[in-house]
Image 1 (cartoon, protein in one colour):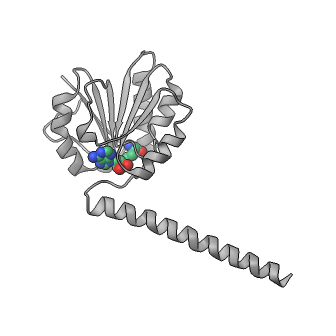
Image 2 (image 1 turned 30 degrees about the vertical axis):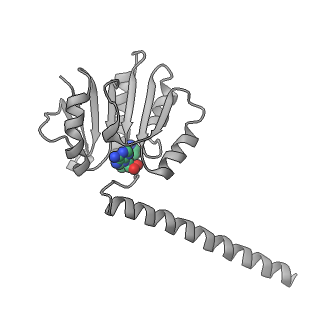
Length: 190
Ligand SMILES: C[S@@+](CC[C@H](N)C(=O)[O-])C[C@H]1O[C@@H](n2cnc3c(N)ncnc32)[C@H](O)[C@@H]1O
């Protein structure tokens, strides 16, 4: 009995240590990628702003056929998964360069034939085929990405940028739930 108890305690301690090590590695990985490489961490869209953006994108996609929707920096697939499930008639593409979020999103998307996830750099992505683009990045990245978006988005394509604006581009709509941080910007390419 005492041996069994000792074994159980040791097993629980080993699992706790293993979990701490794994979480530390993931935490350090996110810190390095966000601090030193100026990438945003893979924080998913969340809260009321996410719900509002998701609802507005759904309203746009409703009753349309065969559109291509891209999430530039698709993270864990938080935005694309519900959209791809709800709209099998549209095609969804996620671009993500970070290994962990990409792998997790691939796993989550395995039963959705209309959702394609690519491990790639958004700056090198051909966006000319997208009818709708969603971004939740950070201000510096939006500053750098805006010329690529303005130059290569097709005419009439829509960009929903969550929380961060495109400099020198007048939004077609600014949807705010209060603070500037709780705002998304809709741009429509001329
Ligand atoms: C704040 S998260 C948003 C994730 C997802 N779009 C969502 O709304 O839940 C931003 C994501 O962009 C990715 N990312 C940042 N720079 C990138 C780049 N140059 N190429 C591809 N992905 C990038 C990050 O790894 C991160 O997962």
